Structures are given as structure tokens and as C-alpha cells.
Image (cartoon, rainbow, N blue to C red; front, side, top):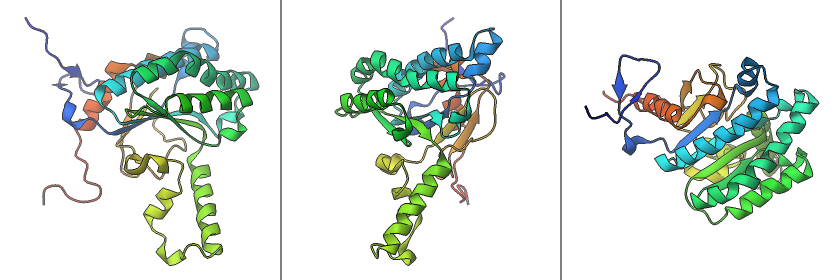
Length: 259
């Protein structure tokens, strides 16, 4: 019997759906959760989970690019992650260096451009340089954008946007009565993404069902998928299942589809 080209939705094992390549979400954002728990379940140090998670980033990036995703935003290090033990933070600061050193050639090969949002000035100098080099080395790529959130927090992002808008108004460069939602969007760290700034789909791994200060403004109308896999266990097939879940929903953006 010929095998069917379908992928099962884990939330409903009694149904099978095909991935609709004509309705791939343009922008997918992922909260990569569960590295530490993945390691602990295997009696390994937490950093082993982060190391394996880096390999997952590589696999999922290529899978997303191959599917035709235009932007993949990954929550790599939050403004709150500085509260973690110093040894773990130091290890996490080394990951971008190792990641870009080994993966940039593959990114260029797959025409993937690197973008970073967040305050990278607080990162160690060597980490900052690795980030800047990756952005420079992939600058000519015009395929998928791999958008890393590094030392990023949405409340910090919105606070900075409000400060910039208030300063412009105080200096007479902006009439407060003309401030719109677009004005705010234009001052957010995601503004270089233009019309693709707002994710169509937000995925969080590891079964946790919270947003954790990630792109709060941008996900106002995003579809949310909370999946059970820890991030190191997530892969291209899990990504497809999440997209199938997204495709099974009806996005109304506050209105009605069938009146």
C-alpha cells in the first residue's frame, strides 16, 4: 500500500490532515522552552540541554526555510534570563559564538538572513562580535529571516518605544494627537520586519502555556500553539504538526468571516 503524505496532529490522533503548502504562516515565532528539563530527565547538567537545543535551532531553521516561512523569530535569551546561575548564563553567552561559527555557511547556502532584536550592548564583547559578523555575512541573503531575540523583553521594548515617542513629541517632532498603532509599531525592535513584524503563529515548546514577555504587542492576533515536546526534541515534523494546527483555525481578527 502506498504511504500517504500526511502528518498527524498530536492533539487529535484520530484525524490526519495534509500540510497545505499554500497556507504556510509567513512569520512563526517560537519560545524555545525545556532545554534544562530535557537534560535533567536524562541526568545531565542543564547546559547539555542548551547544547542540544542549539542543534535543534539549526534543524528547525532549515525546515522552516524549506517550507517557505518568511520570518522565524526565536526567543534565545530574555532580559529575565540574567537571573539564572552565573555558570549557566556564561554558557548561554557562548552559544551564539559557537552557533554562528558553525552554521553561518549553511545559512548562506539556504539564503537565510540573520536579524537580532534586543539590547545586545549588555552581551559580552565576543558574543556581540559574533552576532554582528553573522548579520554582516548574511546581509545579501534575501530568503527567510532568522530573527533572534537576544537580551530581549517585550516590556523593555515597549518602554523604549514609549520613551522615543515621548522624546519626539517633547522636541516638537511629533504631534501627540497623530500617534497611532502604526506609530508604536514603527518604534518597536521588530520594525525592520515591516509588514511581517507580527507573527501569524506563536509556538511554545515544553507544555508551558504562557508568553513570558515575548512580543506582547506583535502577537495581539497571533495563533498560539503550546506543544508538549521539550525544545531539544522539537524538529521539522513537530513544526509541521504545529503549522497544521494553525491551518485548522479560522483567523477573524475581531471580525466575522461568515456574516
